[in-house]
Length: 202
Image (cartoon, rainbow, N blue to C red; front, side, top):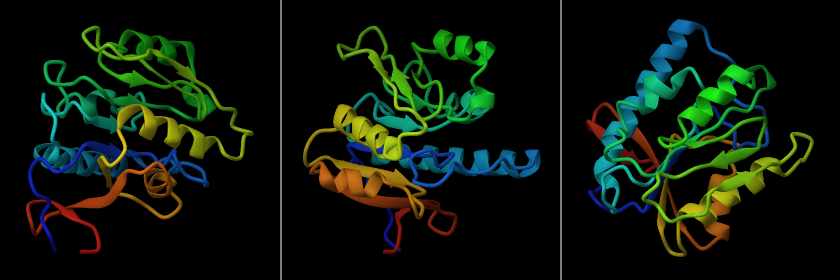
């Protein structure tokens, strides 16, 4: 079990609800199980922060969340003070309500934000000089999950960057995309025994 060193990661991604997969996203969980799951992901993210190279600390997170978990998952981990980039996406039609959409828009200075199916959009803080726009793929597109993952990797990392995927899972396309685009893929998980994140399978 190898504990992850400090300042070795260029980009950290956690696909919390398994949106970037050939299969359907994670099914809904009962409230108690969902709360526990969110807390576990949050603990892992907090422990992963020292592994990021760039400053300010936390500037390289892409975190998949939905409306329920914006505050419970991301705010304690990534405050407005130290966050430049983050990702929030929702995929299911029942999450795409006018109220939810407006909440995303209001939060856009905090988050990269996504609305509808596998479509996604992002907005960066005003002091970032990056493109602000939208990429939309229809749910009927069999390669939508792949296209979205590729956009994320190309826009938020450079060739030869080390990209950590926290809590990777079977069916996730991130490893394939990271390696195809000339980045270095590393899978990491939180270890209670180690008291921090470790390289998965090592």
